[in-house]
Amino acid sequence: MKVRRLERTTIVPRPLEEVFAFFADAGNLEALTPASLAFEIVTPQPIDMTAGTLIEYRLRIHGLPLRWQSEISVWEPPHRFVDEQRKGPYRRWHHEHLFEAVLQDDEPGVTSGTASTRVIDRVDYAVWLDPLLHPFVRRDLEKIFNYRQERLRELFG
Image (tube, rainbow, N blue to C red):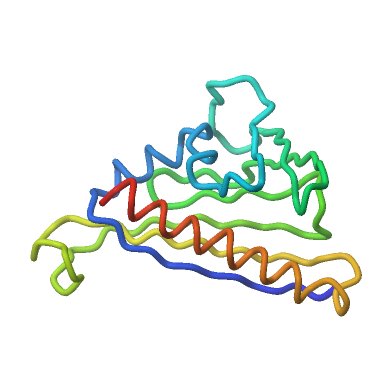
């Protein structure tokens, strides 16, 4: 099984605790997901996010309906958490969310000295029929995580 990595880093001009609190509310995942995926959390909300929490989703990929279950395998507020696929379309899905406080002095449009947060999405994944499907899956993942970066910038301005 070939495991691949996708990583995105976004700096948002908001304090670490505020940004982590946004991600700690599982319901906000819908706001970071392209509408074309028809993403829906099936697990009743609010969801108590801790290590061991299972979350069920429904979504559509290229029109095909899918169910996905992830587990929060690591929960270290306000710096890190990990969700791992337990049931779903990937052979492996390990998504590490990292949050680092930074003092912005050189980010365009951000006031010097503003408390900001570096949000890092690090996804290690493997797909079925890798040589055949990976180029398509990679393109889709890049679009999804590019959208996620744009939305974070919009939401946290």
